[in-house]
Amino acid sequence: MIWDLIALGETMAAFTPSPGQSWQSASEALVDHAGAESNTCVGLARLGLQVAWVSRLGLDGPGDRILDALRAERVDTRFVRRDETCPTGIMLKDRGVVRYYRSQSAASRINPQDLDGVPVGTARAVLVTGVTALIGPEPQAAGLALLARAGGIRIVDPNLRAGLWGSARRVELVRPFIEHCDLLLGGVAEFTELFDATGDQPLARRAAECGPREVVVRGADRVGAMRDGQWWTLEITRRDAVDPIGAGDAFNAGYIAVRLRGGSIDAALSAGVRCGDAVTTAPSDTSAFPRTLV
Image 1 (cartoon, one colour):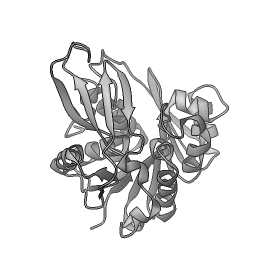
Image 2 (cartoon, rainbow, N blue to C red):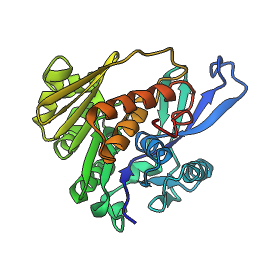
Image 3 (cartoon, rainbow, N blue to C red):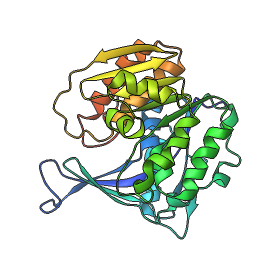
Image 4 (cartoon, rainbow, N blue to C red):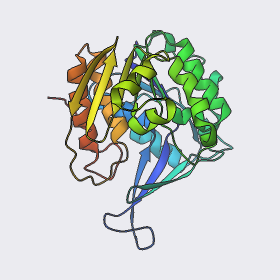
């Protein structure tokens, strides 16, 4: 099989209080899964692409649940390893605020050897985000190995995050991913931290100088893309969100799906906006992702 996309990264068991409640008062919680790369994989699989996810999970109930959920979405998990000594990471969500419990998680032990036997070189695209660079030195090395072994389009989202092993050095750790990618997708705030520029188009231009041929900048009221010096932009209107977490991953999935199928950048931006907006209508990172772009 030739995969449309192979992704590498951590997925956690995610817990959210019932709508309208906080952890202090909640008697029930939504149990879900969350991870930047696997969120994008779910979106791509729903749109009919063949995707595989590479990672490590604990040999525990949360790990079992994540595998079952991703397999039900037709994400291939054959390359996931189970760890008997380290647990699956946990994420607690509370009205848009996220707290991670992923220190010493199984995924923090992802390493380049986990890619042995994975057909990275024949995949049409690979995906890794900056989160993988920030959860440990071995995962960062594995992310670089994924990009080095890729034969197709190398896709990166900086996904700069606080509260992780490498967060204090996040620019230093994530920049090598950017320098070895072909398609870069990220938010304005992340780009501003990574590149010395102000404004969507200047930020995209500075990012392109680092290596990627195609750069997508997600903003609050517009999204834009640059390829070979040409700039496209799309104004967007955001509605009230039930939960905005995961919208960036969903946008990426919509954009990538269109581009892998040979669609235009204009069409990809529109698809990304639609997918990102859809995901914000539910407390889950992926449950409201559409199954068609029509």
